[in-house]
Amino acid sequence: MSFAFRRRASGAALAAVLGIGSLVAATPAAAFKVAESPDFKGCAIWTNDAGEPLRNRQGREIGRKAPCGEGTHNRDVYEVLFGEAPGTLVIRDATHQFECILELAQGSTTVIVPKVCQRWTGG
Image (cartoon, rainbow, N blue to C red; front, side):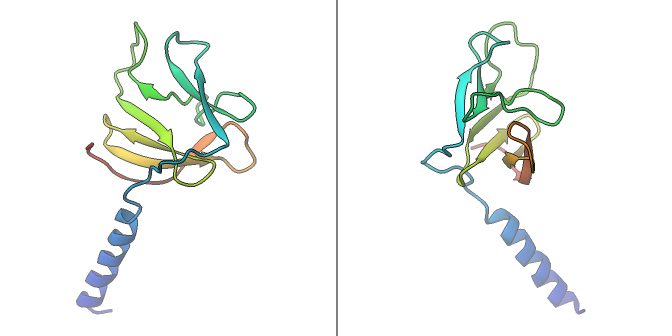
């Protein structure tokens, strides 16, 4: 494989990853809703259509944004928005500088996992 071919192939792969560009759409995914967190007054969390909190694999609720509420000890700064495709969310994490499409783990109605991620520096 020539150097020029490898260079074009890696450029095409990078373009495909960056092509997911704007991951947020104007219309919301019907399967997810925003609700008040039962644990953190004044904070919103994501729920499924049955009202059950969405969680990551470690069991933490998927918050709408952080920081939120009073007395929050978490220093992370992120926002979770409706995804472009039905049944997806998008997290924009300013602390760790990434943006990911999130979806339900296969066979789960409440566990959210990353589908694809890219570097994100805000803006």
